Length: 163
Image (cartoon, rainbow, N blue to C red; front, side):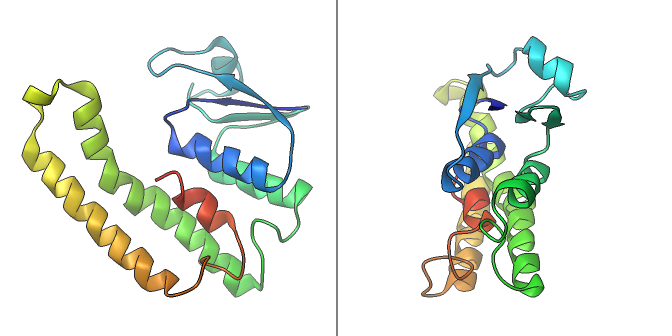
């Protein structure tokens, strides 16, 4: 059985969980806590971070690599449907989620998570909100009037939904 070590507040973990559900794969979920190093996570991942995915002897600790493994082993053309050009576009959307959308929200999340409201830096929060609005505008432009970024649910939705 597949085991996934995760944190409930981690969008990278949610990306993998969404893919597992979409592919109809049963898995065991092991919760970890922010700031605490889970011994199994440390055993499997030299970085000590989640997600950590274990499928028998196969151990993977990077979310995008986990998604590619799931596609290769459990779901040909389910997460990355379409032509090579279409699949490349989906990979770009995953990268955009990780490198642009996530960071747009990160400063605000960290500011609000780490301090009482009276100590929040509102400049940081407002800049983050503006960056988030810009991301939404770009995503809306790419999505247009389609229900999905590809012809059907894909890795792009797995990456963007947790954001």
